[in-house]
Image (cartoon, rainbow, N blue to C red; front, side, top):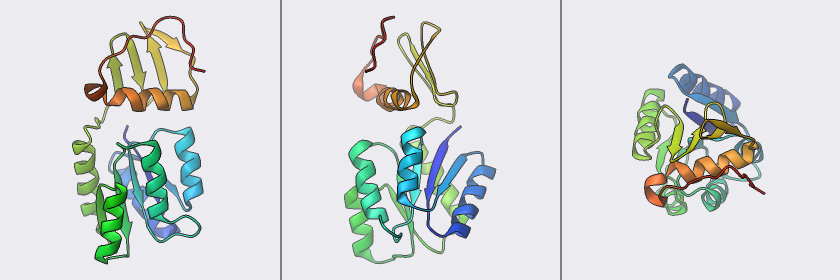
Length: 181
């Protein structure tokens, strides 16, 4: 299932967006603060991020910049009341993929989410098979030749992020001796 992180400090809007996305077949998790989002991202794998800009402590610009340092490929959609061109320019220069101005229509949000996922080649079934390695993002499991690997969530996230774009980085072969540390 596609996992979406929603970073919005308005609790009511956050809940409304998450509920709509969950009802539309996605698994959306909401955060009210950027630090909460960082914690969720450290322990879980997300396929797309929806973020507000104007938030306390860490704003959406800084959040997007930090995410891009770690993951250059995850689609990021800004959802903000800031409708000025400089804010849009700054967001796109930081690497966001789309920008919606509040108030938003949830049906349009869904269209944009699906388009971003399609452009990022993110499949609804989240399994990656490369040579003898299989990564199942829904089960958070990794296996080689059918034998499950003992990997932590962080190790899995790193492997999955690297292998998801196999077309760009080529196949690998994992041997039976595992040493991820």
